[in-house]
Amino acid sequence: MRFLLIVALSFVTPSAAPAHQQPGAAAFANVCEPCHGPQGRGNQGPRLVPLPKDDEEVLAIVREGFGQMPAISSRELSDERVREIVAYLKS
Image 1 (spheres, helix red, strand yellow):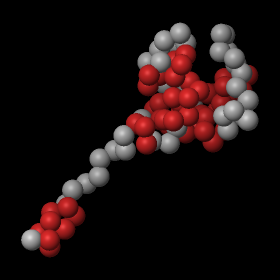
Image 2 (image 1 turned 90 degrees about the horizontal axis):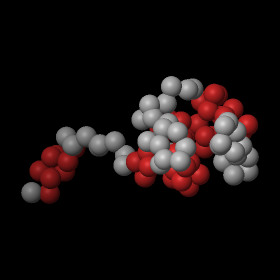
Image 3 (image 1 turned 180 degrees about the horizontal axis):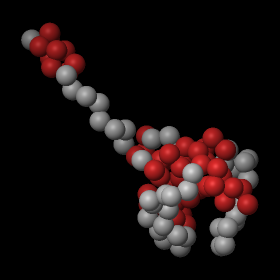
Image 4 (image 1 turned 180 degrees about the vertical axis):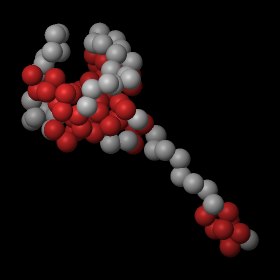
C-alpha cells in the first residue's frame, strides 16, 4: 500500500508556488501594496500589472521616485528585492 502511494505521488507535478511564497511577494506586500493595491492592480498609486517595464526601468523609478511616488532607498529595499518584485509582478 505504501509503495502504491509513493508511486502515485511521484506522478503529481508540483503547482506554482502560492503568491505569498514567491520571491518578491512579501517585499511587494510590505513596500508597494499600500499604494499600488493587492497584486499591483492599482489603488492610490497606478496599476502595475501588466508591467511593461524591465528591471532597470523599475529600479530607476524606485530609486529616483516618479510623480507622487517617493524615492525608496536601497536600505529599505535592495536592488535584488526590486528585481524579485518585478519578477513577481510579471508572473
